[in-house]
Image 1 (tube, rainbow, N blue to C red):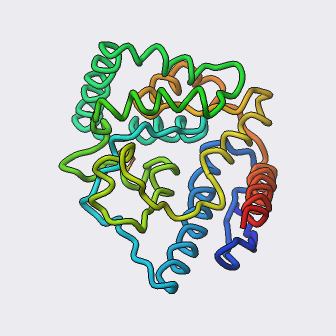
Image 2 (image 1 turned 90 degrees about the horizontal axis):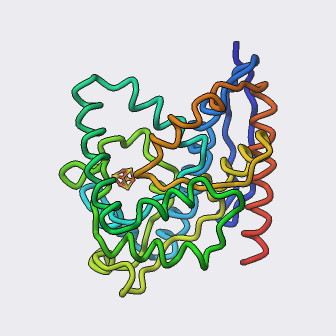
Length: 256
Ligand code: SF4
């Protein structure tokens, strides 16, 4: 049984209205991830539409994966979702991905980054941006392709993290070849879905909001799999997601 909710959100790029079906019973946190990401994508579409109407061009296109060498952060619910997704893949696909993740771990260990990234994933309090910035830069300097990237295409497209869905630029695509040196122009993101899911998870589990680096998301989710088995009423999870979205949107309006 599902219950339908009509959701309306005022975003800086326009009004978003949509219907969301949420199971009436108890559900795990992973069950709310797809609809949360969908709301984020619909908000991003409004931003993109507004930019195009203003004469700008969105440079991001299929086959361009320049930004897939950056460190992608995931919220705990997304890490659990990714683990579920990878677990249901055919075993040859799963093995291929796990081998690639293992190679990435080796490279990050050699570069002395793996343990620093683990500290981020298990931090007992939120890491400030100033602490994360040098880590992001060191990671990007290695230019390691995302372990889920195949022939410059995302191999987990429908399961990719919210952070991957949110980065759209209007600056020329060539500039994305060096995101540290070049001034790229990203579209504004009024709702950071990874942060919103992280805040909801933090409230539900009384833990600090955390973001988990993508290369270690499966390992992190495996270590915390007992927590992922908890369930909550679907409507209560949706309420918490929407509360956090309103908070982000109100901050986005203040910035305008
Ligand atoms: S998950 Fe997909 S979109 Fe995100 S960085 Fe990796 S390959 Fe790119």
